[in-house]
Length: 367
Image (cartoon, rainbow, N blue to C red):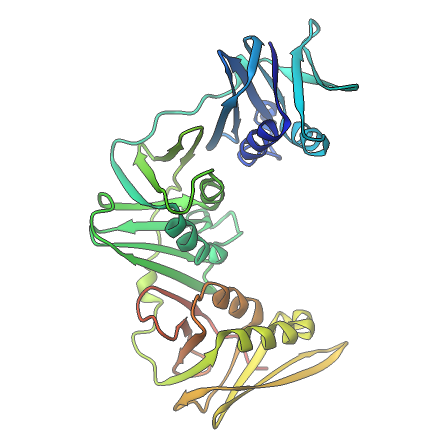
């Protein structure tokens, strides 16, 4: 194989595909990318055994062929090179020469025949939504996905569409983030759990915010195609918990607060709270919230914040990081915090939005 291509397009394709490559695996080929040159284009594919990311771009292909190169190594080299044309050539000993001017990098390659190709997808259901809306919806819940791999079904985001409302849900059992999009006719009924890694790859696809993206489901997989890019991923197996049971059915106390003010003060609290399991205490007194955090080794912090209360005399503690994450997904200027007692979960939602987004946060012990 011998090809010449622009460094920028090559690096973008390699970076996209590397998002799917596996960094910790006993299957060596999954740490590599497949680079295939044919006609007047180059195809780059990454895979971790459960997800595939493919990018294609125009190039001058003097000799068609395919090879596999170590993903991270190739990404690092392409990232550091200046813009301009790159030349990629397969050598007789099986290695590959990457050249740009006087710069030369020789890399060992693997046989492309061993690389797993993306499987078919679709046929059972689909969703079609504007890319900007999808990105925003995913960003508003993905922070609550659990990092604990033994809770497999919770390492993704639930996509549920009933013909009228698309609901995205994520939880790590300490908090629950929900985003609802009330829109008919965007697809067929869906109930699937999409891995976090796949959603991040889909978000990164070169699709403008005002263009529609179609997510197709079938065979336990989902797939998204956008001209020169494709993402295919296995769905997470298992039954997603009944998240609606976690959402409080009523609240007896409410705080209305400015998002930026609360966010700013909680971030300052976290300087000390991070030494104490991120615990930040909140106490409603009149039209103020008294905030406190402490570190056994460093000291204590206190802040005050104006609010509009409704039966707001309550003291409660939250993980400060959870509060910051929940606030980041709120577009408007205000947040409404709905509570009952200090030992019961609280609901954070935009002050001017009843149904679109909310986050349920479990309280921490006050001590």
